[in-house]
Length: 257
Picture 1 (spheres, one colour):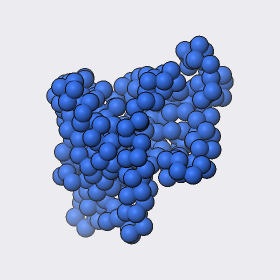
Picture 2 (picture 1 turned 90 degrees about the horizontal axis):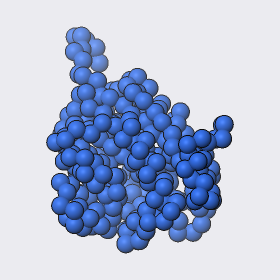
Picture 3 (picture 1 turned 120 degrees about the vertical axis):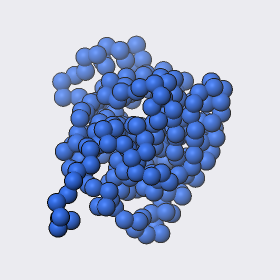
């Protein structure tokens, strides 16, 4: 179950964690200029479409909501939220990725702000955002449980948190684990999880889950739609998502911790 505010995790544990995060930021800054090229390929475009469809099936966006998009990167999902009428704050470690996001938001005139920050130590008060998302970024967080609690902390009671990430137990998980063995790969810094591991972050407040991207990385583009619509029995989606709702604060009895 969700921990009360006074039980949230303490400070980042050690200097090593900050070094890891700095390395992640440098790695993504190195590919910031070319990152969005993935979405212009047939495979990347299809993956983005089915992942976004699942995300919006689970996560409701109301016009005027103030939303946090954690690990926003170049703003791909942030701008989708803004196009639906939300006021969006995107937070990411990598300044180069954020610069790309700002340019895209300015080009479209969308209500989105992009700031550098650490998802394990957000510079916002508790109960601040109407909703929180973290799409295709959770696998790069060195302390995922700490980040989860921090994302829930800044969420208003009754608000929803959506996390979408690569499924370790899929063909896509296998592909990225192979890529992680290559020198210089950004996936060397990733830690992939399964759907049960994702939902175990807070089973008590879980509202829904889903899977998407049932095609394999080397699937013929002409077969994308058919396979996604009717995947083989037992095939797991390469993208998993889970939705939680923050419960209202509870009144504690005297003497309880």
